[in-house]
Image 1 (cartoon, rainbow, N blue to C red):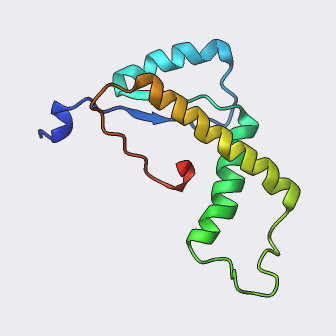
Image 2: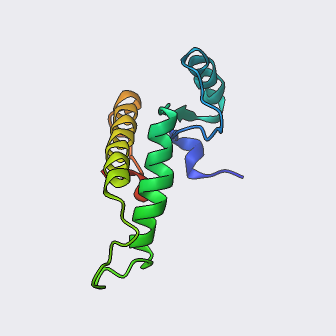
Length: 122
């Protein structure tokens, strides 16, 4: 079945979800293998990936955006751990920067960029 994507250059930019770290020596071969699927990987250090996705996105943003935190309670941040969230905020910014740099790297004039999800709000 034909679609508009058949007449457009569509690329998917994301990080490979893998439980094991992807070594720098393996990144180029993985990136090459993903080309046929129109996928462009963003390689994040394991700690950055985990803090970005599992802590900041899942434990913080998802709860806020899905009304799972009573922000009007006397102590609305009982789930808040300042040290953990400071590290996860740094990881969130770092991951967003890595994605932005990859988008700039593969961007062609006239491209439409669609970012879907709160994982990349910055």
